Image (cartoon, rainbow, N blue to C red; front, side, top):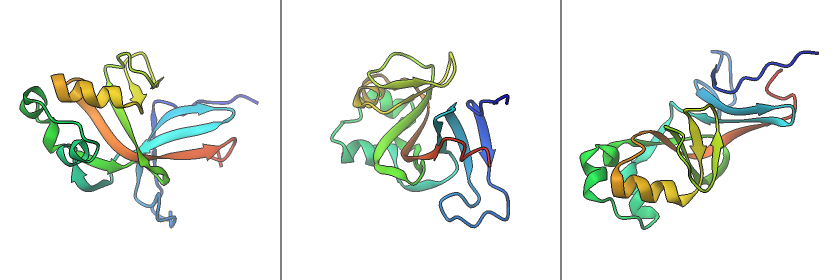
Length: 143
């Protein structure tokens, strides 16, 4: 049986999807292996922007970050798993303490060092910041 990786692709919820976690969702798949899949919902902003998130985690937004427009970006509901944990989907991939390489250009980072860099330099500035992620066990996403 040939398996196709859905990594670096979007899952679009079908109109009949009734699961409240995924109804009307657009999910970017970051990893898809025989063991399972991980993605970030990218179209569900929550009632918080990046400035509010940085305040919540005690990271001051420096001038560079404010000038880059980063502080006004929305924070998203990334999925129902670990909603107390932040994930930064970003380009370029860079080198952070805890980054999953989605492609040669795109990374998903869950370590605090990327937030600190964003605060100090405003980079990476191509980001989607989410709380939580979507996860599937082996074979579940293929159904």
